[in-house]
Image (cartoon, rainbow, N blue to C red):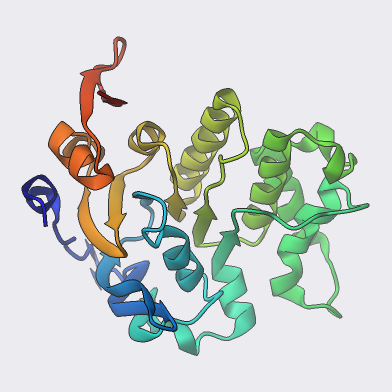
Length: 279
């Protein structure tokens, strides 16, 4: 492991509340994933705390999307164990897990003929099931999610008529209507221009703070990750090679080792926060 990366790899101390230790959002112990003879994740152990925003960064093919799918239980690990909020992830029932974890894939499925309100209403499905009654409480949760994402005026618009940024907000509103404890977002800004990227990530941060929601987000833009996240997790070759607060990761030696290309850092002219650039 390169020295720059080694310097910033660290563990996380378990949170302790007034009534004792707080369960971690996720605890991974030796989590691995392979397809045939190709190893994607060789064995990952880490702890993620509740209410914090984690950014997954690293080169293409480093296992970021695979890890998020495993956390969302979209695919099982080949080895190792995962605990979510103190319980074995594999032991969660489908509906309890759907209430607690909201996953946005890199490419969201089509919503043909569906209005924004109808899409957001799907977020209440884990609470009442296909044959359950959609009641006043569910309607209030949908209205709250639309308001928090600024989509009230788009509620009766067809999802497919929205701009890319508006569609992403509609999917985020559906996730909020779930009353989720955790957001898992796989490259949520990949198809957005820079203004809508900033808008989307600022919204995620505001909602995480307001609701105490934990989030794990795959991001390719290291500067966006540093701007948004409480902590950055850097993957290379499926291994965690660096983790820490943005200022610990935004160093020329760390970024150059991570991406295999010379990178520099300059302070933001207004905030002084570090900005990475190719040399």
